[in-house]
Image (cartoon, rainbow, N blue to C red; front, side):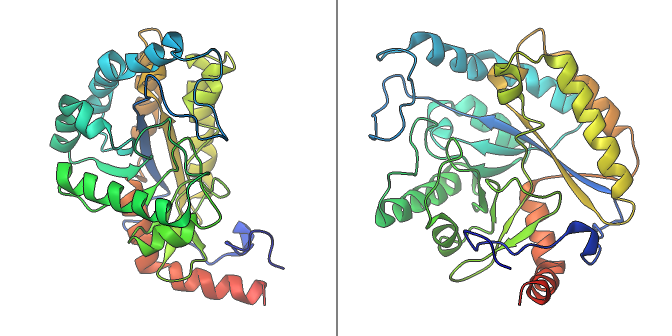
Length: 302
């Protein structure tokens, strides 16, 4: 039976028609650096305070995150280049205007981009429908102006959204949403018009919640390898998606960077890995499996 919010149908992964990636790979691996910019003195929207630790300005929290754009991004870039990784960036669009050197480095590498909002201190929850609609126009226009690329997906700013978010995303021409961390394969999301899918992001293989809880890089390496091993095993029968979510101000610290190198060395040393982007996963799934998945789910949820 349908479950709230009735955006996705329940479909047990063990009963679905199998997914085969384009060259028979077992795991579609995408790396998601969260390249962000936080405002020094953001406006409080009445619902969520970006800097609740202290009255503004919170220099400690602001400067910790600013480290990512000054240093951490560039340290991570060396490791990503070493392993020939093409990323899909979870991008605060203001980065393209505030940090042209970062924008140029990403464009030169032909990375893909999903919106992560304008700033990571402005959230969607309090937006009216027209404000949210204008938000998507702004994101689409900003990305096209700076990179020439079409915006195809979003991880909500600080993973925020409204009941209308999937509908307005599809209306704006986006095809995937990564806020839904509920599966190891893409899943159709019901929208008023168009087609929208969830592409598996990760709050598990994500340096931010782990490191804030004082787990360290060696543990991050351990769980990334364990996650890959299990998905690689299961992917022999039906393809799986694995996302590693990174933040330059965290993984880009000197004492942690070697663990990212170790993780990528291990995974990329296997055959049967499609190192790709969320854009490519969404497009491939919609072209080859979307209609089949919808029909299968409808049979399970009449």
